[in-house]
Image (tube, each protein chain N blue to C red):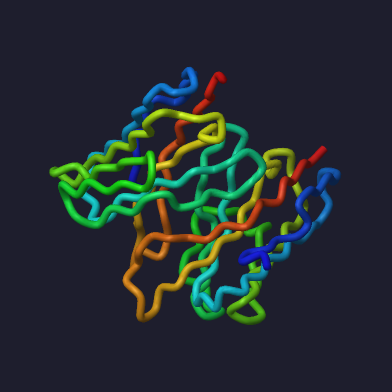
Length: 116
Length: 112
């Protein structure tokens, strides 16, 4: 069983389109994240949700809208895609509450978005 | 935001050689972490360090939490082809430490 699964794994689309990436974790964790990895492999936090509530929203254009229907899911919707949005997007989860932050994030396999 | 300076950026080594990489920061942290990212996969935690001066091993991997709490290093001994990948240092940061800040990564290539 995959602990953190995200779909699709690959996404190729035209500029201006809207697309979504879905993420699910079966680890029972209370916190989920979206990270963006650019072409230089730099990993940067985008959003963090704890028990369906947004707790981190880094400087991300408001074209990016996360949605957490329950604590096991965190989806990412992107409007009006731009060339600079091309990257690998990673979903991750961790257990924060009643657990000292050990720093262990469990990552999905990534979703490679290519905007043409 | 906090910046982690990770070096070297990339390394090419012969199979069997030892490898060393490090991470420094101008800020103090109470936790240092090392992750590895295999090609086409997400990062996976290798070693977590929670105490200044701590030296922790995981198989052929050894990591140390610097005594100043501003740095950490990772050593890999007797490298093998499956050690190939990108190694990241990371620290919990932000309010409530709900996020990790990652270094820019060290890309390791092992020549058989």
